[in-house]
Image 1 (tube, rainbow, N blue to C red):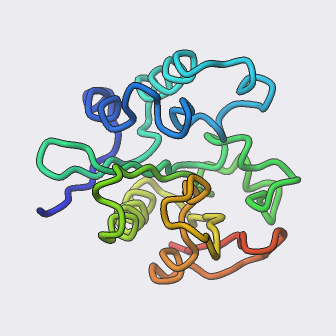
Image 2: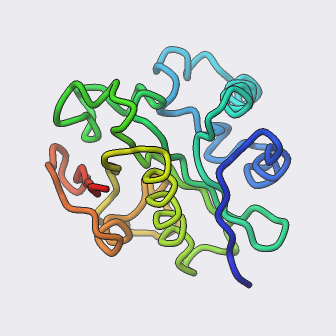
Length: 191
C-alpha cells in the first residue's frame, strides 16, 4: 500500500494517539524525551507526557511528520528546529550542536525520534519519512537538518533505534560532521 507523509497538525491528533497507543510509545514517552529536562521526565507519567505533546501539537507549528497507509498512521518522525527539542542540544550529548548558536537558530533543524508500528518495520518507512522531512524542512526555511543516529544495533527492534539508523541517513545524503560518542555520529544534510 502506498504511504502518504503529512505534517502533524491538531486535526491529526486522533491518528497520532492511535499510533502511540495506550502506553504512549516507548514506555509512555509520547516523544517528549528531548523536549523535557531529566527531572521533569522522572516526575512525569505517561498522561502528563501525553498532555505535553498534545499541547505542543495544538500550539503549532507541526513538530513532526506522520506516515499513513490509507487512513491509519503507521509511522512518526519528530523533526523541527533544534530549539524545539532543547535536551537534544545539551553539551554532553552526541547530538549537541557544533556551533552553540545553532541551538536557538530557527533554521537549524533536527530529526530526533522515530516510532513505527511493529508490522511495518523493515519496509523502508524511515527512508520515506526522512525524504518527506527534508522536503518539509526545505519548505519551512531550514538551512540544514541534523540527526544523531546509531551505527549498529544487535536487534532491529531495539528501542534505542528511536534515533534512527546511520545507514538510513547515509542513503539520504547526510554527511558525518562529528562523532563524540562511538557509534553515534552527528550527521547533517545541507538544504
